[in-house]
Image (cartoon, rainbow, N blue to C red; front, top):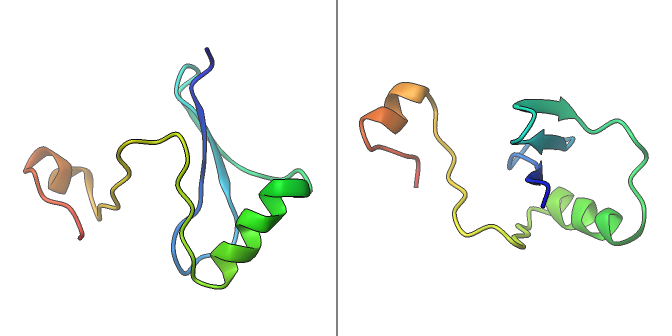
Length: 72
């Protein structure tokens, strides 16, 4: 099973495609349509959509992670 995720940050436009197996993060450049367009619309309205991810935490630096801190 591929380990891919789509990520968007609160307050920012755009989405990213994360490929954990390849170790890459790329801006999503393909046109968004269908159900993903609904997600983008919700994001623009300030909503949060989580599906198939058990933990997602925003941090300001790698140092915060190693020290056990996160924004929250």
